[in-house]
Amino acid sequence: MIYISQLLGQKIWDAYGHPLGRLEDILVSATEKNVPPITALLVTKEKDHKEKIFVSSEAISSLWPSITLNVDQAQVKLHELKGSELLLRDRVLDQQIVDTEGKRVVRVNDLQIARKGNRFFLTGVDVSGLGLLRRLGLEKPGKTISRMLNLPDKSHVIPWEYVASIEHDDPLRLSVSQSRIVRMEPADIASVLDDLDHHTTKALLQGFTDEALADTLEESSAEMQVAVLSQLQPERAADVLEAMDPDEAADLLADLPNQTTEQLLTLMDDEDAEEVRSLLGYPEDTAGGIMTTEYSYVPDDITVEEAIAFLRTSEDAEEDEIMYYVYILDKKEKLQGVVSLRDLVKSPPDRPISYWKDEDPIAVNPQTKQEEVAYIVAKYDLLAVPVIDPDTRQMLGIVTVDDALDTVLPTAWKKKLPRFF
Image (cartoon, rainbow, N blue to C red; front, side, top):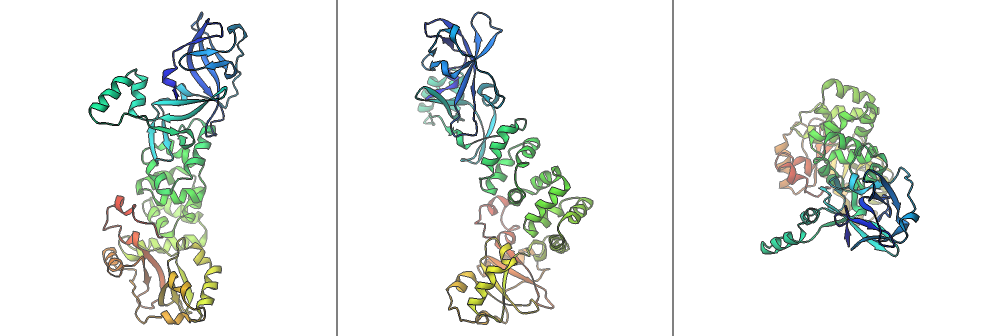
C-alpha cells in the first residue's frame, strides 16, 4: 500500500525524466463511494515555485517508489476543478473524523492509497501512532522501539467507507457523513457526540430525521439533551419530543426553563402533550416520575386468539417498541393481571385471558419511591412493573427495568444493560 505521507513533497517526473515540480496535494472525487478515485495531483512547478497546477490523473504512470507521468510535461493535461472534489492534505489530514465501525472520534494521521489497473484510489485513513511516526520520517525507529517495549507496531487503517467527516463547513461531505452515522446504534451516536463541540454536533444532527434524533437523545446525557434541543427551532424540537418515549420527553422537559417547557408542550400534539404533562406532575424520584405510558394491554373477557388479533391492530401496542408483557385490563382500565408475550403466543387459541387473572398482581403506585421500585423489579425478576392508581386500581403506566435501576446503577453501567424497552 502507498501512504500520502510518502508522496507529499516528492518530485514529479515526466515520461522522459524531466522534473515537472513537487507534489503539493492529491485531489479525489466521489467521496461518497467506498473507494474514491484520485482525479488530479496538485503540483508546485519546478521553475516557478509560486505556480501551482492540477495534473489530471490520466497522466499518472506511477506514484511509488517515484511519481512519474506517462507523457512529456509539455503534453500534460490539466484538470479543471468541479467544486465537489476533496484535497486530502488540506481537508482530511490531521482532521477529526468519526469511525462508524469503531464508533469513536479519531484523528487522521495518514491516508492510504491503492492502485487498480491504471487508476489510483483512496482506500482508508491511518489513525495509528505509527501513521504519525511515518509522517515524521520515524517509522523504522518507531517500529524498533515498539518491538523492544512489546507494543503494537502496526498501522490501524479505517476503510474509507467507515469514515464520516465532521467538518460542518462542507455540506456535501457532511451529508454523506450523516447518512453513515445515522446507521449506527443510537447509544454509539450519543457516545460520539460527547466527544464533539456544540457547533459540530449541531451540524451533524441537522440531517437526522426526527425519529433518529429522538432515539439518539434518549441515549444521551441530560446535558447533551438540553444542549441539542436548545439548538433546534421550537417547532422541530416539539416534533422530536413527540417521537421520544413520553417518560424520556418528560425528563428532558423537566431540565428546561418553565417558559421553554410550556412553549414546547403547546407546540406538541395534544395527546402527546397531555401524556407528558401528566408525567411532569409527579416527583422525579417516584414511580410516576419515571414511568412510561406506552404499554400493551388486552381486555379481560376475550380468548388468546382474540387477544393476539387485538394486539395486531392496537395503536397502543404499536407504540410499545419491544413488547414483552401484556397487561390485562377490565372495561374501566383496572389492572386484572399480566401475561408475558411468550406465554400468550404459546397458549391454546381458545384459552380465555382470564386464565392469567390475579387478584393481587405485582404493582406500584405513582408515589412509590424509585428505590422501592428497583427493589421490587429485582426481587421478582421483572423487566417492567405496572403503575396503578392506589384508589381505583386504574392502570397508569409501567416502569421499565432500566429506569427503575437508574438510581441504583451508575449511568455508564445502566447504558450497558440490554434495552428491552
